[in-house]
Amino acid sequence: MKMDNRNARRMMDRMGIDMKEIPDVEEVIIRASGKEMHITNATVSEVNAQGNRVFQVIGEVEEVEVEKKAFNEEDVLLVQQQAGVSREKAVAALEQSDGEVARAILKLTS
Image (cartoon, rainbow, N blue to C red; front, side):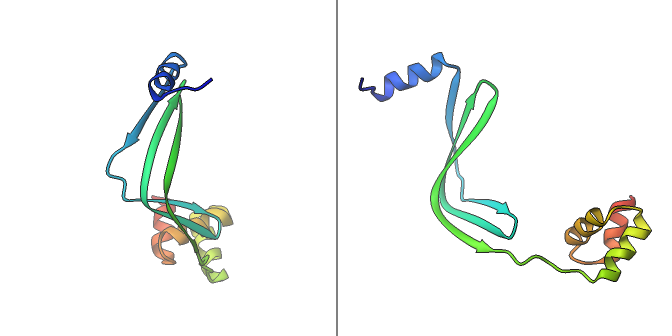
């Protein structure tokens, strides 16, 4: 059974599926552990099916290795003690504050 674009659109409407293109997208970045995917000249479509949003991305993909920041163990321990948080939260705060101990502590305590 061959289906043209008009029939496909009608069928999607009957199933409660709405698809639209997101205008003016320049770049999409997907961050994963240890790498990023930069998708340039991207065309992004959003499909809304019964309350679930799905994004379809088409473009030129470049994978970039991301160097994980290593913090001094004393800095991590100091942030943990001063803010009263777990090691994971202390490291996350240091990452967000570009390794500045005082900013990390303030971020966690304010």
